[in-house]
Figure 1 (cartoon, helix red, strand yellow):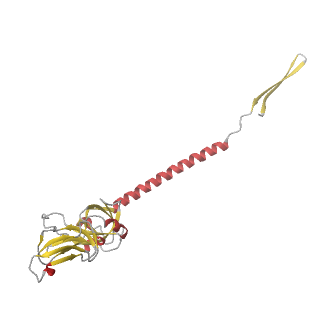
Figure 2 (cartoon, helix red, strand yellow; figure 1 turned 90 degrees about the vertical axis):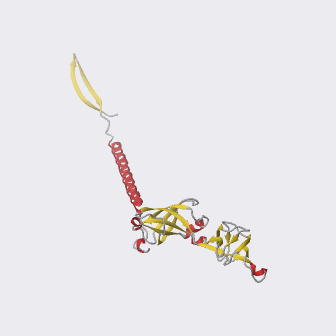
Figure 3 (cartoon, rainbow, N blue to C red; figure 1 turned 60 degrees about the horizontal axis):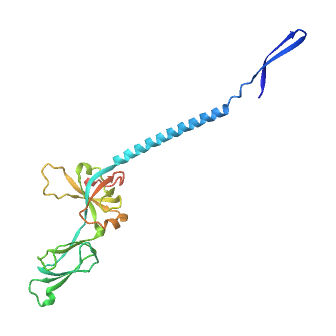
Length: 259
């Protein structure tokens, strides 16, 4: 350690000259390097905190904008165009060869019937009912041994490739929608959220609607190809929650103009 001489005093003690020397230690060098490093670290932490706060604020803004763009369309029902199979004449169902929820191919024999009216021979009185198209049997309308009236459906099926979601939407909300918009569907039987496309708008037929009730139209949503394999396993009539992304299909035909 280096030292500095603060004072030197010389005096005589009788015949002897005495020199008194007083010293003190020099102050340690200032640790400027460590101080600068500490300041740099503090500044870096502050910058990181500010950046995180800014990112969090941006995320919140984006989330709120996304929520505003997602419009709750209401509760949708899975619908399917029914395919009915029956007889033009009254008949007794002698044998049912299919069951509900069974997939059948076009031309598959669904049931055998015996006409109640007299015909030319037993061969013409016994008929086979065949599926006019591939589909899934939804209902056995007439059980074996029962009589089906002329034109009455005996078996009902539907084409699973043509199922859709239908939701009744008030006119005020419908003005926010356009054809081709993307909708997100959630509900029973779905592994998660699936997507569908706003295909068309149809008039709502509701004879029981009271006067002065809010006007509504029926929005038809077609499941996207990636979701059809899942939707085709569902039973028509199930209900689902639907929200529509109004940032999609910008510039396309307004839904209210397509009804």
